[in-house]
Image 1 (cartoon, chains in turn green, brown):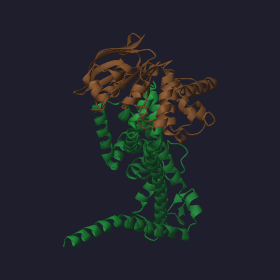
Image 2 (spheres, each protein chain N blue to C red):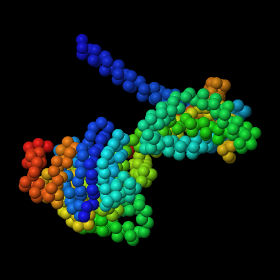
Image 3 (spheres, rainbow over the protein chains, first blue to last red):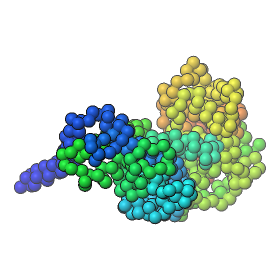
Image 4 (cartoon, chains in turn purple, orange):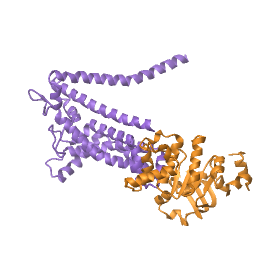
Length: 290
Length: 248
């Protein structure tokens, strides 16, 4: 009787474990099946490098280069804002802040991670967008820059918490060794702590960027959604994710437009998969080193 | 000549008292061995000398520590630690070449000239008795060295910033007897130019290299005397018990 119970529990756990892999494979296969159907109509190069996205014109023009560049501009902008601030914040929390401030800051960062993205998008819409319009004297504040600023807020919690873990796991003896040689606090941080934690910090950055690329809602609300090739950060752009979210509802099932949105899904999947694998490599390297 | 003058030193970590009323002098160019069982306060004593205890959040102290007649608490902590270097229990080479490991400290303190750097590296490695073993492969990784060589590399790295005092915190605890002998040789030759404080769990090592020996027990300095006298005719029965292996 006991053996039977053990057997059942073991198998249930096994099935639950396999389920997650099974679903990932199913999703991927479905995405591939629907997405690859597009290439019966358009060749892959035209799709990836095509300069215009007019899905409902006749015939539809399905070039996603403007969307890729839109995602890229927003992501690079967000990275440029969130990486320095995030890493500096992690440094402050792990190395400088005294006990109480440290706990408060950590709580604050976790809270930031808990804000739903639609709320962030909404706040961005009524604060950052008008500011940008006003400061740069633009016809509209719905720009790539607004998206970057907002997404930087979203990437921060990931970057800060993982980078802080990496700094925390640097052996105490490294730090003491540097201080015992007469290094100042800043020399210790810059020449010992940061290099020793570098792989973890890089992983933090990659995961932060991964979050930014995959983000949809806030971006859709505040980047303006114009599918043109961006030349500056102060113009409206449209990202890959926002395109899928905005157009899926109105695309005719089985049309080229419909397949093209799935193909965008594949592109996104490949990008975030690559980012996650890179981050994983960095994290893995760290555990091996220590 | 007195290098360190310690007067009625008490140290607490939180509510636990690690050192109780310790007063002593450390002379220039001597090797002072510090022995005692675990939790006797000997490492706390050592870390006091270059204020490394202050990294502990609940650290409190009373009493005075003077280096060359000036209170260490009044000195700039970075320059104090430059003057009073530490060699830790586990050799901790950086993931760099042998040369860069030794040059690390002086470069951090702002030395730019290549010629001066390589002079310092050579001199330090010679002082640590490692030069002959590594002079043909200064560019290889420090991890390729044996444990004893790594520890002497760490000694060279400490010497490179030209300290006056070197604190050894159980420097041979992870080493085999032959490597230990080489590190001890290096220490004996270093005392010509440096003052050395050696904390060790190995009573025989204290007897071999120390000019004077201090015995700590439960945070108190029980006895401090010329090593030979201490090991032949200790004046306190607790010292006798420890060095003859009855406890600890």
